[in-house]
Image (cartoon, rainbow, N blue to C red; front, top):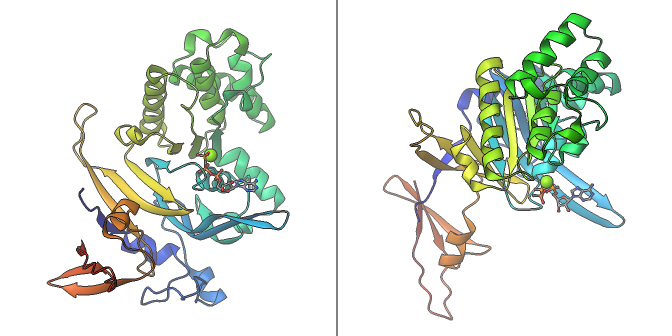
Length: 344
Ligand SMILES: Nc1ncnc2c1ncn2[C@@H]1O[C@H](COP(=O)(O)OP(=O)(O)OP(=O)(O)O)[C@@H](O)[C@H]1O
Ligand SMILES: [Mg+2]
C-alpha cells in the first residue's frame, strides 16, 4: 500500500487562522493557545477561506461519562470548494457539521465561517447566521420539509421568515427549484414526491436564503445510487453557478469521485486528505492522498501500517537521507527487529 504524502495546511492560511501558533509555528504542548489575547484578536482569516477550524474540541457529558467527540480538529475550507468529510461511525462528522451549522457550540478551540467567529456570536447573531450564512440538508429529508405544503411553498417559507420581498420569493424559489431539476413539479405536495425528489426540495430549501455555505449530513443516505449521483450533480451545478461552498458528510469512500477533496476524520481529528488532481474529468479521475499534519507536527499514521509493523505507544523517529523514518521499538524478548516505515 502506498504511503500517503504528508500535508500541512497552506502556509498563508495557517498563519492567519491558527491562533495556537507562535510566530515560529509551534503550539503549546498541552494543545492550548500560546498567544496573548491581543495577538489572537489581531489574526484575521484570509478572504478566500470559508471555514477555519482550529484545535476544535467537543466533549459531551452524559451523566458521569465524558465523550470526546472532537479532539483538536483543524480544518480549512476555501470559498466555493465542494468537499466531503468521511469517517467511521462515531468519528465526529455530525458533531463537526452541527458546530459549523451553529446548532452546537465547541467545548474549546476556534471556529470561523465566512469571516465570522462563531464563538463570539450572541443569540441574535447566531439566529441571523443560521438564516443567512448557512443552509443545512439532513439525511432524513422529512426533517427539512413541511409535508402538507407544496415544494414551492416549502422553499418560500424560510424566505418569508427572512422578510424577503414577494417578487424575490417568487423569482428565486422558481429558479432554485429549476436548478435542482424540479421545475415541473414545484406545485406538488411533498406526499406526491419520491424520496429523491423530496431530498432535492430539501436542497432548494437549504438554499432559499442564498447562503454562501451549504452543509449536508449524509444527503444520499436514503436514496438509490442513480438518485445519489443526480444529487451530487446538482451540488456541483449549484457550486459552479452560485459559488456556494459545499461540505458533504458521507460514509461512502466513492464520494472522492464526486468532490474536489475528501477529508477523513478519525477519532475526532482530521487524518487524511484525498485531493482530485487538476485536469481530472468525470470519467477519468486521479487523486493524491495526503496525511494531514497539524501545526505541532502531529500526524496520524494509518492504522493498517501500525498494525503491520507492530507499532504501538513508542516509536523511533530519525532523519535519514532527507527522509523521516519512523521505526518500531525493538522488542528484545521476541527478537522482533521490525521494518521501518518511511515518511517523506
Ligand atoms: N448529544 C450527544 N450526547 C452525547 N454523546 C454524543 C452526542 N452526540 C454525539 N455523541 C457522541 O460523540 C461521538 C461522535 O458522534 P457523531 O454523531 O459526531 O459521529 P458521526 O461521525 O456523525 O457518526 P455516524 O457516521 O454514525 O453518523 C460518538 O461517540 C457519539 O456517541
Ligand atoms: Mg453522523
